[in-house]
Length: 446
Image 1 (cartoon, one colour):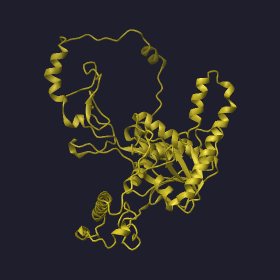
Image 2: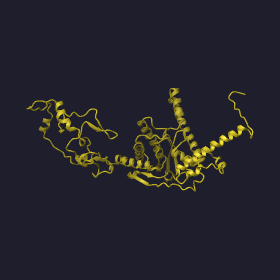
Image 3: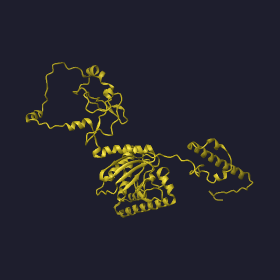
Image 4: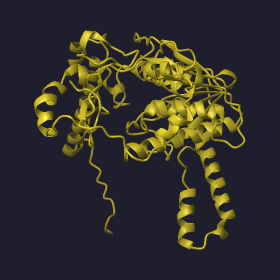
């Protein structure tokens, strides 16, 4: 008998070891089934948990045929399903002749668009999310079509690389490039038929990395590169309407920083063709859809924010800045005044009082009156539309503890704010590294 060979021992039907092995298998299978039933009882309020403690073996033999199948999976049609209330379109932005971007709460598979973006990892084997759901519904036909077209895409990449082989002076560099070309690149799109899975005309599988989060900045750059390549391919393929779910979660659920805003910004730029030398305007509608209500609302909030940044009619200005620009006047100075202002020497005046200590003046007269809550928590300015001057829909949040309950400032305050503080990224006040020197300032601090 060679080393590593398998030894199979067959016991008779009356053997003690055979009966012992059968008992262990039945016990393990029964425990697995009972565990599944208890999990289903917690998930389904219509199931009585007390009825699951029975050890009746009437249907045990049938259940053992699929030991890891849920108990209520076979009769899922007769069991009452919990209906998900879809809110429909939450927000939409019209970009004039270029098209429309909208945020929808609903099932991505029920969107009647030309294409549906489906995120998949580079090995085309998703373990969670929309990608796994689509491949399970599509079955073997969809999986075969996806793998065949992925192989065709990789072959084209390798042929393009071998055509430029003479440009590589070092063989190691060519081997490295060949290895990279034999893999699906991040942002690549594979078009397949739907096979009845979705109402869309085509399924566009977008290759996403296994995880985004190496650093917040690199994760954002990866996501921006992925969605940009995908939308450019869709636009060049003469596809007019696209449904896009949340593809920023990748396979392990990490979400890049400002992922919703990045997706909408790249969709806006792709529809306008801002990054293309010869733009094509085939893409005229992008629908960001998700069946999770919180995700859909995040899309709608990001859409409002991006619209106020990108669209000229919705761009905002602080109210003091707007009124300052509206009241600008041209002042004409005489040449003598301009000549006086160009004089190199400083204008000094005679001092009629002794020069006191700056530190003692700061400690005795200024410091007791500087740290006031309403001085530090100055309310934010009111935002107005740059084009019309009307109050904008998107405003900064009010800050608490300000005097008289003022939430926003329409005109500049007469009393200056604290110069040594600033608001951090998390909304808390922190000291500046180099505060403004108060002794050289001409403002009054008390």
